[in-house]
Length: 259
Image 1: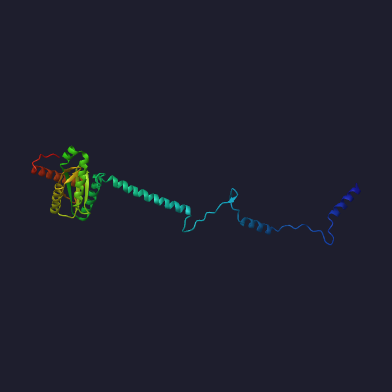
Image 2: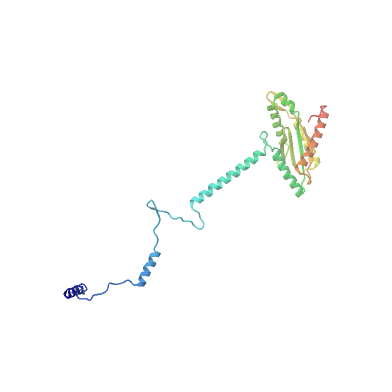
């Protein structure tokens, strides 16, 4: 037993025997501060780029005064769509306020402009007149030649009226064979002279339909616009004046009054 213990001690001493020419040393241990610096470097090291299907994803770069081309293209596209939509709205509004046959304002468009004119007169003290016109002898034309001939008469009447008004004036079709004319900055005497001139022009107007020549006429009533009126008041006053004028013309021609 004693011999075994002595043998084991000698074996252990040989395993710890220093190398030739030197002494036995402990293996070097890393310094504590060095380990912390290594950990800090690892934390600051750049992370690898993410990859999709083996390829690195591109980084998004947004400048301070410039958007990426994708959003810029979308902005341009949206602006173009907005401009197109606004243009379409204007077209629809114009078509909703224009008489499809004659190309002038319909009742809705004319009344809107009349309201604007009255608001301007009320605010600035301007002057204006409203002339109501009703086409005479249109029913016999429709009964004899059909409504296509009546449309030709209406178009000829409108062309004649437009040739005798200023660019600042407005003519509208209120419905059927009834028209209205909005005139700016003229006295009552001037408005009545204008109404008489329009009657004379249409009365003398030869209208050709196929091989037939037909005639028509207009009865014109005048109402001066004032600041205390609204559109309904102005139209009612002009309508009463036009009805009275139609009665005068029929009486002068020896015809019974038919509205």
